[in-house]
Image (tube, rainbow, N blue to C red; front, side, top):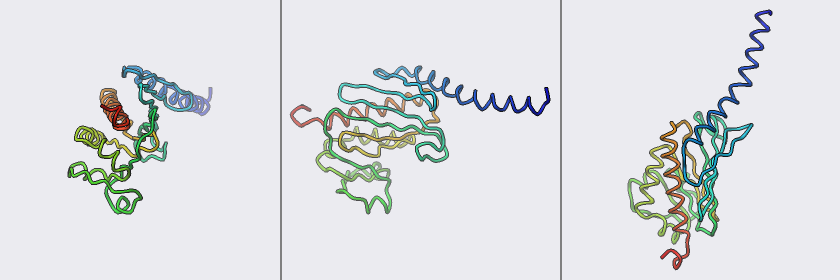
Length: 195
């Protein structure tokens, strides 16, 4: 066989096998995480997803390669959760001129370490219930892992995080997101039900 055609055949095989191999390895790594209530949803065209079910909420974690979801240079994950009840609305912005001009009531937390990372705008009564010290510490840990809570709005929670984490760090990140989601669900309960 002519070396040119042999090279072309190898190139085509690599272009077809590499993405499929990446998806198979990714799905296997997600299954090995062993998160309670989580199920892996493999995909033919994209990387697999993880769905997490809890009594008060359901979440889906999508993984993107560099450039997906409008991302930058690195791959990342997108956490979208739906609570089974109403919530207040909060936006967690990056400090700077855009955050100062954003809509919504500015929520002063009084924690300098937290306020260096986040500007919170939205429902003051919901923020008071949610933004206790333990929740702020979770958000600081999330930011230290390049993760970010963006919005809580009408029962939907949006977070992002890095994808290029080793399996142990990915599990740690997802466990942190689950704990934060549980805190959001608890703060969303009516006052009499939360007691």
